[in-house]
Amino acid sequence: MQNAVIDLHPMQPEHLEGAWALSKQAGWPHRLEDWQMLLGLSRGLVVLDDARSVVATTFMTPYGDNTATINMVIVDQALRGRGIGRLLMTKAIDLAGDRECRLVATEDGLPLYRKLGFAESGEIFQHQGPLAATPALPADVNWAAAADHAAIRALDQAALATDRTALIEYLGAHGRLAVLKAAGAVVGYAAIRPFGRGEVIGPVVAQGAEEARSLLAFLFASRPAGTFLRVDLDGQSALADWLASLGLNHVGGGIAMQRPVRLPRAVSSTSIHRFALASQALG
Ligand SMILES: CC(C)(COP(=O)(O)OP(=O)(O)OC[C@H]1O[C@@H](n2cnc3c(N)ncnc32)[C@H](O)[C@@H]1OP(=O)(O)O)[C@@H](O)C(=O)NCCC(=O)NCCS
Image (cartoon, rainbow, N blue to C red; front, side, top):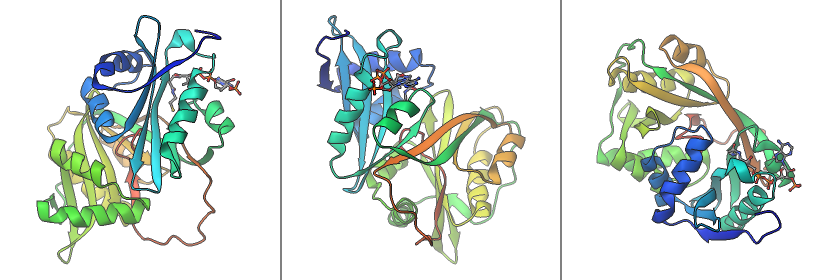
């Protein structure tokens, strides 16, 4: 494909099998259903070769009108180093319009993202493994009711400074949401859904690490020992050692990046934080 025109198309459902093959080639655990979820929430792009096979992918997942994540940037191993990744990223940034773009970079992606003006904003710690021990069921955490969804959306918006209604509705429909309440009000939430080799817990949004731990403990307690679980922690936290003690070891992660760079906020405008991501793709 070197020096040839790159055959770029909007991603359609018929491209998902080919896209899935690329993520398997990259060693990523996504199932076909995980690609379907991303396509449902995002605008995707594919590059096709002369045989109409998918040889590169990416998604732009919009959150409201101020933020987007760019994810699943994959180029077939045999075609790397020819400018396809750069073209896909440029088109995805165009699709995002005026939105701030966020992503979680692999080592492969870092040089490209830096060149395109992304700056590092944090680190993601991926924990996973078969659940080896079940923590005690915490008080004050329960499965969310439909009436809790508005409060969940508001908490998520306070933590992420963007509107992730579509993602939260998907998580409620295809996974399960749990809420932590204090004096009858929702003060934290977490989601669990099937993903990759088992299930992923995230987002986890709460005021502090203790509250986040309660939400995680509730979801762990809902699963039989041996269930393969994954949690992508947002930055260093006291939760890491605890997760490892339950069988979810630190196995890698990525670098959180954003573009354009926001001015650092001297004082956080909210006391609500994201402790775990929905996934590295979705933030
Ligand atoms: C990351 C990836 C998409 C890049 O795709 P690609 O088609 O090889 O990228 P390009 O050929 O467009 O290269 C883009 C730029 O990054 C640079 N670059 C790429 N890999 C690099 C590396 N390992 N070290 C230094 N620079 C690198 C290239 O020199 C190029 O710079 P230029 O445009 O100024 O010449 C590809 O390596 C890949 O699919 N990796 C596996 C999946 C993955 O990790 N994706 C990232 C998810 S966050």
